Amino acid sequence: MEIIIRDTPESASVVAARIIAKQLRDKPDSILGLATGSTPLPLYRALIAMDLDWGKVTTFNLDEYIGLPREHPQTYHSFMWENLFRHTNVRPESVHIPDGNAADIPRHCSEYEEQIRAAGGIDIQVLGIGTDGHIGFNEPTSSLASRTRIKTLTRQTRADNARFFGSEDEVPKHVITMGIGTIMEARMNLLLAFGENKARAIAEAVEGPVTSFNPASALQMHPVVKVCLDEPAATGLKRADYYRWVDANKPAWQVF
Ligand code: GLP
Image (cartoon, rainbow, N blue to C red; front, side, top):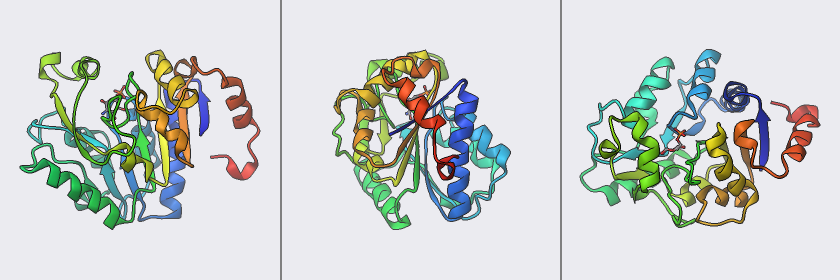
């Protein structure tokens, strides 16, 4: 894991945006895995400002709520179009987001996996992290080998996400999410976390044991993971000084 610590969410997001921009320049038909929530917003703003060519890019989103009408403002479909896609030249047919209204959810989930495979696999997967260490909507005790499937949200996650809805009761209980096994197949994972309320989840994910109690800790078993943090999200890290030292002493060819 490469831990990149910056003063603010914006400056950490610029690093993440440069990593994605380089990917799109090197391979214009890249396959990007994308995330929602408040965390990737500064990244998406930075990408929009870079005015990249999304004409050949294919995207797969991590997850979606089950049962909300597609045009509901809190679906991840609405989120992605509002906060990223409509500001780019991405082709609508190249955008993939799980369908929370699929009639046959298990079948839809295996088709989603098949679409990722058929596209050639994900080049860079963007991830946020829940306060309980979830990635996508893989709640604690999710199988570390899991694939895209239905999940039931924890009370904590519903409480955390209530701020986007009128009340906690309006947050759906069920979701479709890529599995941890799916995420682990991305060629690079780019995890972003900001704010002190993420410090514990990040410390456990980066320096704790690999455990389904903190699903993000599975990323320790992935060969290419970059973790972009602001200072408050890094406060639980015991080796923060070493990560800063590594970052400050990169060979020139490694600098983003
Ligand atoms: C949500 C999403 C995750 C996201 C996480 C953190 O429930 N499914 O992909 O990373 O929770 O959200 P936020 O970035 O708003 O803190």
